[in-house]
Image (cartoon, helix red, strand yellow):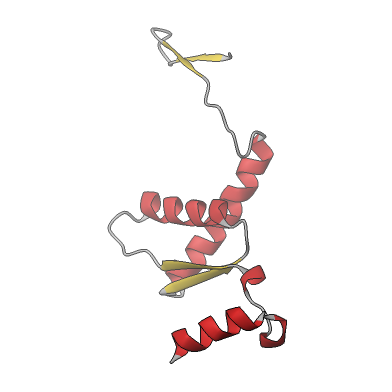
Length: 106
């Protein structure tokens, strides 16, 4: 395992292990996207961010952590997730599912 030393050379600690984005350029790209979105939300005073994607957790974490670190005393936009595969046309639903949805809606 690669090891790092502190500036004084007194202690060693393990190098961080990145499981999701093992390459520095990937981490930098996620950071830049997150920063731009976070700054836009703040500047435009956007109260809610809806992310329509099935693998959007890195963006959510990046935006949230950037805002918390840079503006710790400010409120953070609410974040909601929508899975596009969760939407189906009524005609594509099976009768049993339609019955359940009608019961919920009434």
